[in-house]
Image (cartoon, rainbow, N blue to C red; front, side):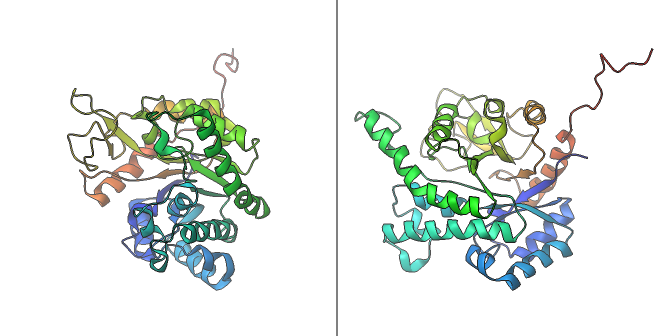
Length: 329
């Protein structure tokens, strides 16, 4: 049997949790990666109120769904970023314009997320850590080594106490290697693990869509860090090189066909999912394959149903037979 195929609810929080459960079950998903915003999951309640957890689990069970991971992306984002007005929509309205208070709210919420995941029976929380140095990406004015060193040091200081909570609850945090994050490619991912002394609480949520458009071979993240792949997003991206738009987005919105790249429904982009599954097999990954569905050019439910079928076609496990050794004479 292949890995469970789940739906990340982050792109569905405009709908009530129970409705998303019904839709996901009808589409054929095995479970959900539950987003910790909207009404899908309140991490503070899930950390402290057993009746709330029981109610969430009952809804999942009624629809024949499991849950192996929680998604904490917008919570973690406000912890390590240099905050601006875009971030305030992630936090309670009364904290609008108060960056220090928003950051402290994020830290408290992430600590709750560790307990919430444990109470929900999940072994992983996926998400972001933020980055205090993303705005230094293009080194003009010049970015010094010291500035970069300070940025990584700040992330370590902010996140080690949070990861202590994850250790306490026997849950792992899976950072999505992603543009605008402290780790966004191979070298920054390796440095991040080094900076945290390779503590086991920290690993990666592998998502190829954020790597391919940068020019990376996505499966290298699996091949180089096989023991740190704690969760997997199945998400596609299409890259267009027409000589007019590059990889920086051109300040054009997602879905605009003039962009140099756009997220696509699974199977409609340029990601080589067969090679990714083969690398996951080699790494011994047996966790969920979670569909993060984003495609501005396609109706959502059509795409999500098509995507679960796509993942099933690629969700093969390694051979149990060594064909060159196990032949009968």
